Image (cartoon, rainbow, N blue to C red; front, top):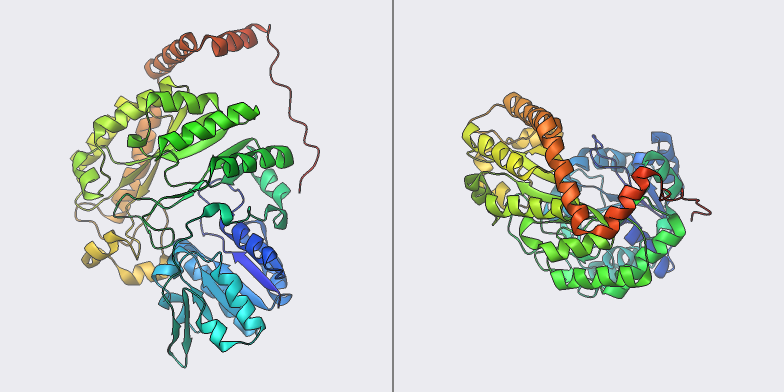
Length: 467
């Protein structure tokens, strides 16, 4: 039985185009079990490519995030019409299996982490073993319109080191690099997040915090550098620096091995301090992405961010002082937000001075606290038709229309960029860079030497091979 695992493309590609880790992990688990598997990322494929891949496989697994639900259903319909077995998993399937199974186009839904469950399902189907099928953790299936199998999601995977590395060799890595001039690669070192933000789906990875060993992480980094020569590596952890000691250990090991590469971290403003940021920079961290969501204390409390504007501003200043570039995520249109809250957010952004801001409209996703708390304001029909993107929402706001929110989102970005690129801010950043090089004289001498032509620029990378 041949399996195709398809990552369904979103209707808007907002993030940089890079390999999706989820289907990579599944591919690696299938290989470990000796099961034939093909991986396909629809963002790099034509409709004809997808149809051909469905034709040559027996079982089609879909990986679909909430914005991709409609497209996953359309492809599953096509696959069922070709007589294929269809399976779906991922965050949305974990919280809302009925949206898939009720269509009649999906034979099985897998809830929770599918690393172990999905190969179990395929082995049970291959053996035509109903008892084994009914024992698959997280499996949900209908028979004659009623739930036939309705198993709870499996326990969260505690020992992440037991997972194989993602099967990058099953995906067209060169095509990703051609579509991403930065040669971006993704890595994860943890799963889960203990915080209680009301907009975040936690069903798949949970509120616990599970970590890989330092050796395992740095081994993978070394493998990626030698195999693919990436331009930059992004850690896709929800909060990379939750345990600072762990990141100090990782940075020390990167430096001990002499690995020279640039990397990106996702984290929170209250999970960094200056010694950690300096150590991260020495080990190659050049960007941090922070989820701030708002600069208004009232909105931070509504979203249950457990942050203050003061902490946000302090983190941004420390990040810049450590020589790291900061991108921040902001939400507009949170429940009860007013223009005064927006003005407070803009004030905090100017005090903090991040290098890039990305603003999204508040979206209550099914399976989150915001979905339960604000049900009366959610247009479910609109949501089921359109699902979500960063610039529109099915949430009916108390103080803004959808058109006003979209214009507000764009205008906030325009105003911030005008301020950021104005001469006073350019001069401030130049002064801060100068202070950074005074504090780090070795780097300062190199920078000055390059500027004067005394120290040669780094040699261009020569890529010898790709897997």
